[in-house]
Image (cartoon, rainbow, N blue to C red):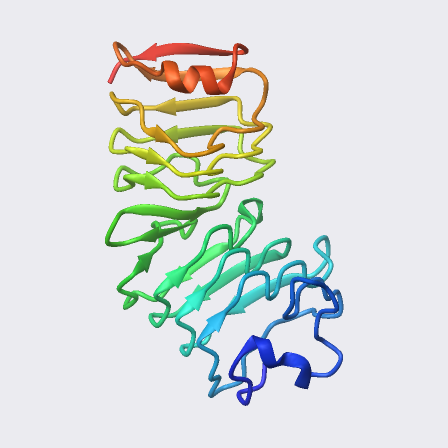
Length: 238
């Protein structure tokens, strides 16, 4: 990406790599095999879908370093790509939903001086620091840390690798589509004594059967009705 580019909307000047599809930017361009930002990059934002489905998802592996000029990474920016690592600088102040596929299991490296976001100790998650809200997680971040109060929208969206999920007693809310389409998820354990609020379609399109493990004496009837009759409740000690 040349340093002369000031907006993804003006990318017609980069001949041969502009997406012909509705998504815009570099989206769905299989000729893109790496993403490198030139020193002195002036871009302030990476719009939604701007790199989505670049390369061949089965063969092209990306290691992405976001430049220090970027302040915003919008939703679905890197959807449909096979990403090994992504480095996010201290300048980033906004990260949208579903920016990476959760089944990538990529390293998420966030600058220690970033005041808005941080990752977990194993570099598997993006967490909003001021609210303790989980913005994104790899599928193997399936035992959620107790610092997390809320799952954001589309955190595990359409993961086909997550089979179990453990949620902490600190959790109060699960965002819309947060666990949508996780068809192989068979066990959900939640230690919150009060069932967290579910956003729209938070549990939509899961397996037709599974096990919901919750504290003894808690009321998870709302969750049970959403999950369906094939899901059974098992009570656990706190």
